[in-house]
Length: 129
Image (tube, rainbow, N blue to C red; front, top):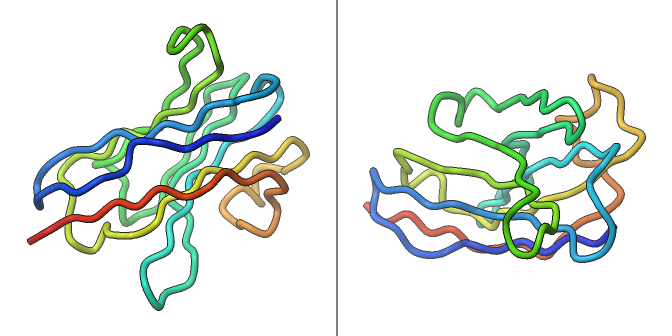
């Protein structure tokens, strides 16, 4: 499977953005899809993940209650898509957001970016104060 991320942009604090991670080839069946972000000068950090088949999700404490990760198979000619709806955005959410896929990850490893072996290009989210 190959990943394409889209949807970044500039938004004021308190606003919303939706990011999308699409399977350009293949499907997400059997995969976990994770969202990670990297702010300037910072290490990449976990944001959220979803298991495609079970729809089981998990979030970092910093985004819980504000971000929602979901799956969609009807958008854009039935290509598999994982979306990250980001609400109540804060300047601290400014970062390059990337999606990644893992087929063999166990539950306890899904917050660790080292276990993901397929990555899409990042998309920049800028939240102004």
